[in-house]
Image: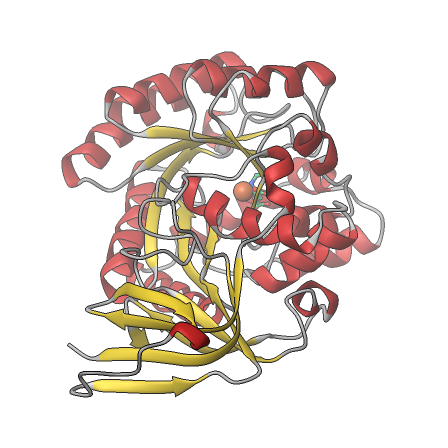
Length: 415
Ligand code: NIG
Ligand code: FE
């Protein structure tokens, strides 16, 4: 297999000599980098790196591609641990309704929102869903994403939920990105179950989960724990059924209301609790006694014009923070991770160093991938990108809306 040597790297960002599974609290403020560096890749793996002044030259030129990265930086690929990027159609009519004054909740109550996406997805073929989702993966690859979690949850029937998960399974094979699949059957209550909540939950547990187990269609289980969606007790029942099928919980909580979802996540060893726009002091104290990764989705706040999550309070309480896009047609029609860095710095008041940890190693943790992704370390997968010529890494969040990525390398292959 081909080898790659990247030399004259202006700054090699997020290097680790002793790899850690996540970076927590105050430690998020300092970022390890090497200036004027080189990095070598073989068989899809990072084999070595160092400073140019200590470089011993090349002994074996066979099959070697040399990339000169003068004035450019190298980053580990972004790990986007929360998306819903399999969907049938965009929802810009709701966007216009919101401009005219309707809220996300009001739009959902009049039949828009998740139920609108489900109706469209049920009528779309597996092939078309696969094609459009693959295009979205190509798009996020260009802005530096190398690993992504994708949820079901726009099916809301046995047939359509399984269809979505099969699409994600096919994407895992077709895309060079590392992909994790999450079953989110409990994303909203389908209309036909309006008077029979338990009927739908029974359907998730007794009909969907056994097929998912049989076909090995998911890594995680998610529930939208929120007023008008699923209660903490219902969330607990669903994720416990998932845990029995070896699915780890990663749950939507505290987007609009703090109703106890965080505590359900903690008590059931969730890998992450995601959204957290609305947090009480108790929620933060409870998280401190857990291993759950708090995951913030600032482009959802930006797009829906809702409050931003209290990143500073989390970090000053010695908690880690992970940042993800939430790419979906309703609340975040974008999977752009450089834009997440900008929003994190501008609205969450995170420093660029904190935001880089939150989008790389902490994102990897929230997908159980820190052992192989999320930093530049010997033995990790060679998923990285080379930037355009930029003056400093601060330039990435600063130059919001532009794409800093010039060359993408995934599994040691250049794209
Ligand atoms: O994470 N909050 C729940 N689910 C998605 C939005 C779903 C939709 O509006 O289609 C989210 O924001
Ligand atoms: Fe989401």
